[in-house]
Length: 349
Image (cartoon, rainbow, N blue to C red):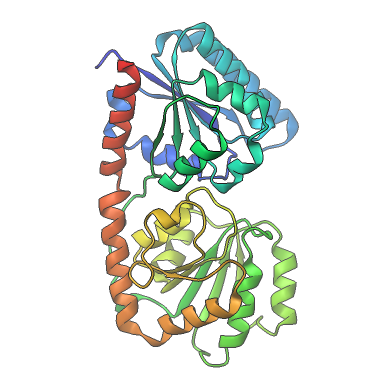
């Protein structure tokens, strides 16, 4: 197997599924060295001149090296721009008769792409399609019944972090996102408006960019400025500090693939309150590893947050169960074994 090699292709600016985080963790797995993997980025989050230069550089590199690889593993979304930018590399893979894996970082949004001719053209020519959850595999089989390419499921990996004792946690609620209507931070603000006077020693931290000023003004208009902080985009140690100290994580989204941030919250031992979004229903157990509320229902969200604030024992039990679940289903070791199996299967066909 030492002679088998994998070219991993994707976009540094894809947000669905947290592609950059997925690749960062994959590079730490044994499979990366075992299959002599090489990361080829095709897009970057810069101005148009940088984007063009980055893509052209990727094409030149691909032209020079793709012939040495056995599998070309595309991390992609059905967005036409993303597909068009990756198309030259895809065509080179076809010309070189490489095994092609299409790793789709999207969930229920797949329904919007059943008539996407470029997407379906690529899917038909792939050797394997990877989806983020069993739920999306079932949806794909229903919505893309004309695609006969085999499918499989590969969960996103999540790196375990040292456990933080409950007594070191702060009375804080965290939401981390690119703030927009899909992420629905307004639901958390509405819920907190109902709760804040009952829990004056608790604080909400909103981590991320996007339509920050819009939602900051909303918080101010609700009289929440003293108990809600918008931090802006944070990374590294600062982000780690917020997660290590947080007691509750809130996910209000309407659409996701398989949200990496929930896995991260679980790994940090944070109690999660979430909608049944994306591929999470594959592993959600209400009352055990999360508390669930219906899409758009801020009143139920307020009730769920209140239950956790009031019940310290519940917070401890949920945090322990969530960390255990991440270890057994999403750890680097588990995802490494699944990835090795996928590559071995593709090469044997």
